[in-house]
Image (tube, rainbow, N blue to C red; front, side, top):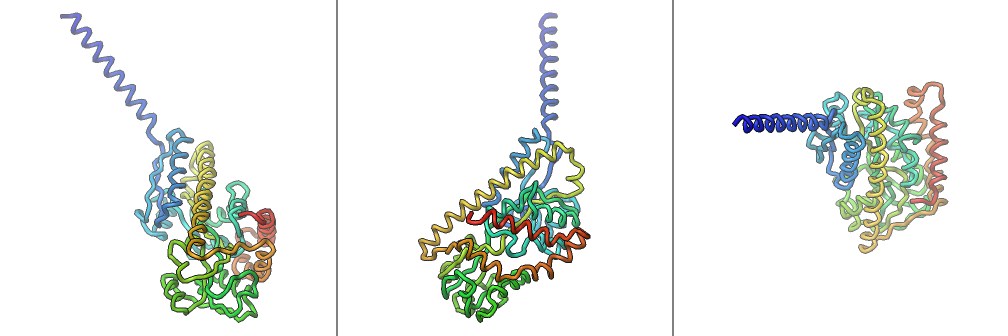
Length: 357
């Protein structure tokens, strides 16, 4: 009997010890940081890249950082997500630096900063990219730090009058434009003297305006031509890439600054690899969209480097920069002549990316 009791007690102690060890092991695996990641819109393609980012962060930090994605505006719309990250109530979000929210955000939307995926990758590289560095400075003013940038493609010129290969081909075309003053001014300069006109029409009315011939064309992306069935009311598209659709994955700056250096490096490694994946996903999807357009009778025209350069020169970007970008750059980088430095760097990137997709 005594032997049985002794055996029972030893077994009980063993079980309790194992349970304690298991609980300690489980506790050791518990995340030190549990973050929320807001995606204000429905972005199924990019979300695959964001899910990859979350998994890589968990892997590279050995489970120290655990991120939960809240897609489709579950945390709030864009501006609500912005304010939540700014206050630190939400840790991360995919955001666009609208100037109404980020005073230095105008550079993110400037025409001809990049005009290809290759140029985008160089300009927004997390270590040396000139646009990444400038946008980091801009987001700092609103208590955020960008981790990486994602692209949804470049804007080209679509219409139902003629194929556009040179600025003179803009003759007498009436384009729909948005309230983006930089984009409007650049397109206006491209079409100067051709009789081209521009109309500000809400994007929601674009399809009907094209079908009723209220306008002849618009700036748009290959993805949007497919997603919104614009190919039904358009005959030509020039893949000019004169503006680029870019958004940032950002984190609350105070939170970021308080992280250990090794954790920052692990997250930055995950960010770089996931940015590459997001770019690949976008490019692969665009290649499929081009094939879909061809089947529907709309073959995008890919301009040569020389043809792109002609549109760039006609845009007269120096004047637009002086009006929209230089005042903020001079304030953010006093005495450094940053406008000239940034434009020179972007010129190098444009030449290095010449002829590349």
